[in-house]
Length: 121
Image 1 (cartoon, helix red, strand yellow):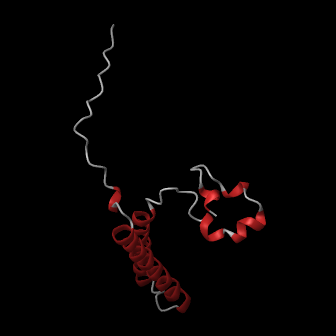
Image 2 (image 1 turned 120 degrees about the horizontal axis):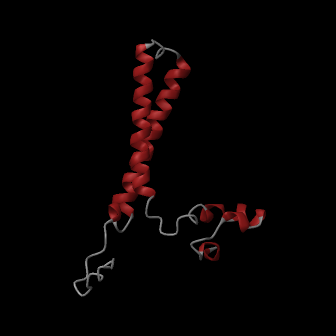
């Protein structure tokens, strides 16, 4: 199954439909070969979803609709979704990934700065 993701430009569109369904779990990670942004994206998206759910809770309190069952359950669902995204993103970013928060590599002292370009008028 690794030959489907061998190229950074691997795309799900070029895989025949039966093969797509058999290898669906591995193909989910083909779009981003380094998997470097899943954690931080989950953290930020979780915070955004929780803030939006809190805004709808405040709107519900202002317009007195928090007592409506479907409004309350929908709001709780989004609070839970944001919390799950945040926690899973945090676990991936700081527990699983080898370079948390996309730290840059250590600087190499042997490299020189590029020669500046001088425009002659």
